[in-house]
Image (tube, rainbow, N blue to C red; front, side):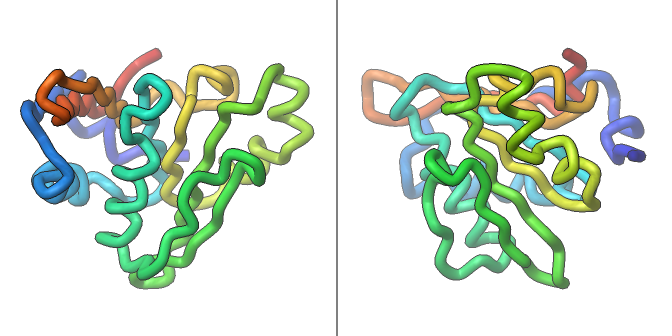
Length: 155
């Protein structure tokens, strides 16, 4: 699998402070040019910090009119975006072992030429490529978020 991230300075980081629900588009607009398959985008945040909310907004920007929300129980939601681009929203929260990840079929899914949006990537690190876009979401006291986006994150 060839990654477009290999052509970026290593690593490149952007930080977006004080982002409320109405400003998520600013972050999405910065990220969107990098979403060329195959690409992995891993979301790091505490429970309830807004990973799913952000991913649903990102999916809408990619042509998905009605995203299903978090695939916590089903693990994977599959979409067909603009230009017939396959997109997977993966919530690995319930994965407790490499065996469970393997049995879920993630390894086969990850071989596809697709965009992968992954919540709780720390649960499946052995299945992720070395380079991916990392999005860290931190809540602020003012009910806003700080988004730190690192392109070509090397684990």
